[in-house]
Length: 123
Image (cartoon, rainbow, N blue to C red; front, side, top):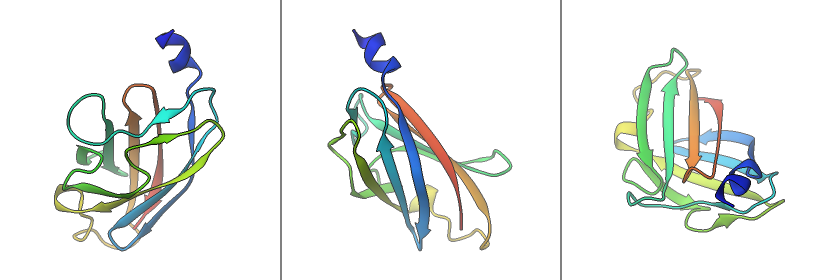
């Protein structure tokens, strides 16, 4: 049953938009099962990994940590067919303030092992 849910789980990133220190991700569930957007450090949780375009890891954390404080879309599920905003304020280890404008970043979100997605954005 769990394997079937994982196979039927798919999230697409429609838009990745950085506004100041807020990363806004518009996600669409195009799979056949709801996707949990869990917060906190206790498993199961949603993890966030961000890298420079060279591949160097900038930060790895869970949603709603002090590094990626969730301001919208956390703690619930992205229902089948739903488009949802996931917004995070990036701070501490995930802060991009020391990077020049036009720097490109890649990120990955892992939704408690149920599904994963990722994309890119530019500062």
